[in-house]
Image (tube, rainbow, N blue to C red; front, side):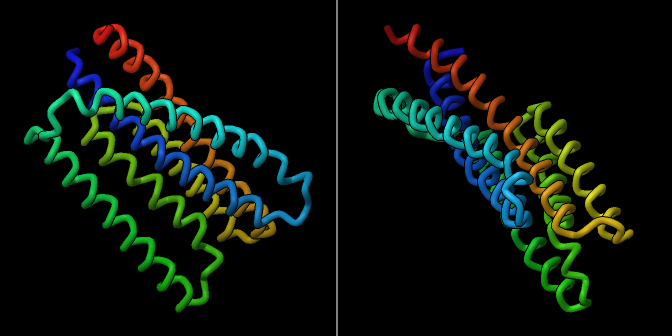
Amino acid sequence: MDSEKLFKEVKGLADGLSLMILVTGIWTAIAGAAMDNWVYRIPGIIFVILVIFFISYYIKFNKITKIYGTRLPAEETPEEKSKNKWFIIIFISEGVLIFLVINVLVNINLAQFFIPCFALIVGLHFYPLGVIFNRTIHYFVGTWMTLIAITGIILTAYGSIHQNYITAFTGYGCAAGTSAMGLYMIYYGNKHSKTLLELNK
């Protein structure tokens, strides 16, 4: 793998890590807000630590891309343009679908289903991303979050467990999925960064 490709890999992983920082924080906040007892918020501390860990590597990867970004051409290949286009389409479609689902659920007085349905949409969006970026990890994370979401939907439908616990379960479960993705990005970001540094000594 040449310097230009390595640079783009590190840059892409850094950008992806920034999203994992955001969504892990969001899911942790959703889970923590559902709980009124600090004992049940303890798992959230783990994810907060992971978010801080992710931020440190995001800064590290960005420093590396800033150093080498000025030495390499900024032009995108047709393949990269296609990937970016489809990423934007999936991202926008996900946002529109989430907006529609919350409005429909509120209007039919089933707002309690929103968090697990939100998780389902997010989980499913990992599958097309797996096709675009050709990463198996997307399918694993997508399957994990989809199963968490379906479990949350079933538990909500039965109504035998307080909704706050279902929300916390869904939030922490999804945070675990996005954290796994973040750790994957750090692993490969480190690997590619080291190779890039060695090639440019």
